[in-house]
Amino acid sequence: MTELTQDVRVAASVEQVWADLTTADVAAWFWPPRLEATAVVELEPDGRWEVRSEVADMAVEGVIRAVDPMRLLDIDWRWAGERPVTQVGVRLSSVSSVAGQVTQVSVTHRGFASPEERDAHVQGWTDCLQRLVARHEPTP
Image (cartoon, rainbow, N blue to C red; front, side):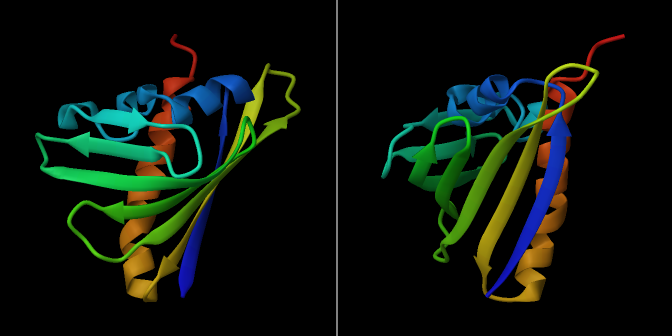
């Protein structure tokens, strides 16, 4: 099995980033606005973590496996209608910065059947995490 890991720094507190990931607010940034995403998050083991777009006819259907508030979120992950389940782990940590509060976000996606399957997810995670970063960038 193969995996991918991506890290970004977000100009926001751990509490703010945690809320972005663990409330229905995830729909506001996870996919581009044109997809009109909705989300359901049941923040408990075996709870749902889903982001859905009726416009694009696609959804991620997740089951929360572990929660450590403000630190970690582990999800069994699958695209709606597809069989393989992979695992996504999100880790948050506060980073010292003279510019204000900064959160390190590390996403590890495991369980891909092949390097090609993993590679097909790299751009999606890159785009997704950049939208999270942009959400907290100061406006000029």
